[in-house]
Amino acid sequence: MFKNEKTLQALLVVVVFILVVGFWETSVRLWEVPTYLLPPPSLIFYQLVRLIKSTLFWDNLGVTMAEVLLGYICGIVLAAILGVAISQVRVFQLAFLPYIIAFQTIPTVALAPIFLQWFGYGIASKIVMAALISFFPMLINVIAGLQSAGREEIQMLKAFGANEIQILLKVKLPASLPFVFAGLGLGIIFALIGAIVAEFVGAQKGLGKMLMQFNEQFNIAGQFAILVILALIGVIMHLIVGFAKHRIIFWGGQR
Image 1: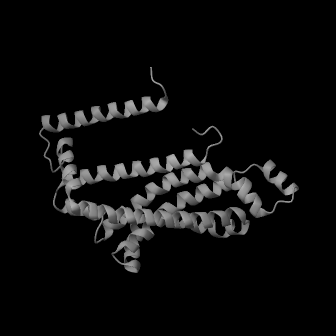
Image 2: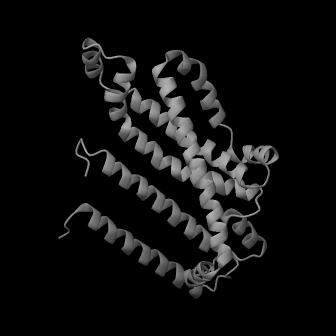
Image 3: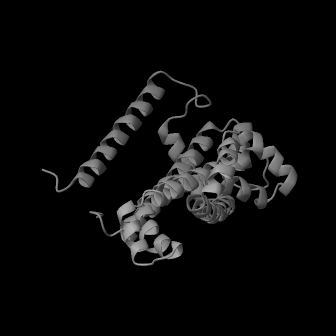
């Protein structure tokens, strides 16, 4: 009946969306739930349209996206450098990996006020937060990917006189790409979360700042509208990473 699994998935997503939104709208209106507690989807859609027409929204969106993308890029660079170093040099793994894991156990909200004191209320503190929160999943996947290379291939290259750099580029790096892209997919989501959390704590602009303002105004529908936008941003960025993965990793049954 369906040509492929993706078509079925798309249909199921649409059906579930219609059922959930329909039930939500009907229930809220039938039971006369106050809009300041739970607004109906129609009111959220109205607020969403108002936001899209507002220049202030696009200004704040641009700030948040700059924080996310710059933080994400910094996280990628840091994860790549440390991941290669830790996977290639056993001493680095023994010395630094426990500290990195311990640092990641600290709640992100606890770090945000410190970064605000160090880097101010501008974009810098949000970039640092986005970079650090996205860094760890990418680092772990880089390390796991580089260590997943087959021993037979490595031994064969060594038999032909290959050095460590050649082994890294010709065997370990290609083998690590599925892991790396899995980390990149998680990292972009965590970068968005990190930027928004930092904006909650203190910011001059950004979607997190708008969320806090709507909360103070008891504009719950406006908050839901921004949450919808954040969800869409996360999905789109995740799909972009997935598209890049399927374009770059063309072997091993990738489609």
